[in-house]
Length: 205
Image (cartoon, rainbow, N blue to C red; front, side):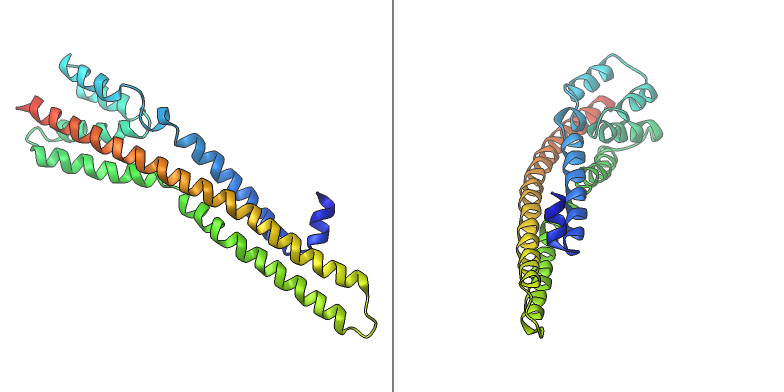
């Protein structure tokens, strides 16, 4: 591996940095977008059951704030009722929707960076290719043509092109996968939040 890095020349270092960053982002999103961390099992049923049992709102809010990504969304609706005893169903819906937008932003965190790496890696590989071609032409135009310089230029061009694609393809695939996962989570959260808002509005009537 070290010999490949040496043969690829300095343009390989930005690509190595991109590969490390992409791997870190993929692992982080893969962990944070797990179903149990976004939508804890039975969170809606347990919250509605607690409402029926008359559990104090401050206690429920504190519990929900620690329940994954969906919990704070439901907690916002309860907090709206707790802070304003005259809150209407529109107020509850608006409060939950605002919390939902913040939750979606949290789910989408780092995905733009992963998409940027997927787009930039081939360009960085192309930069290495151009640098290698420049070295090749420099070797040809030298007064004493040196095969070693020609071989080095070819190595820089090919290694950087290949490495750029090796980074870009998985990054793009994982970005599209995470986008689909986020869309699925958002849909489930919207359905859960709407159901909870309706139950909470009816419970206050």
